[in-house]
Length: 108
Image (cartoon, rainbow, N blue to C red):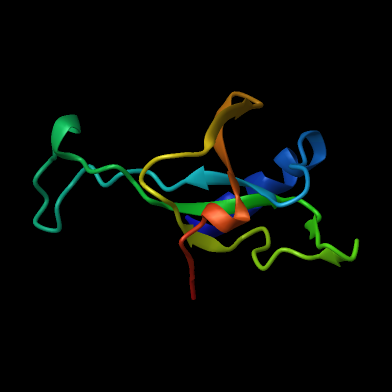
């Protein structure tokens, strides 16, 4: 699944690039089955807080005017806040845009 998200990101990068310290992410699909094979109804599926970075802006400028680069890069798996972000549809796919400072962490 991780490789398909990276492959799809190359197509999105050609048509959309976030500005400054913003990051375009694609949420991971919610689990529809338990480990035992039981199908979960939509109401019991939790909100997915994990996403893959598809594209990232160039960074933000500090008080001296120097460019501070982002710490996340395309392909990173990140933890999102429960609320926030801006939903965006690019090439018929739904993505979200967050500021890098709103991201809670990066999975290694």
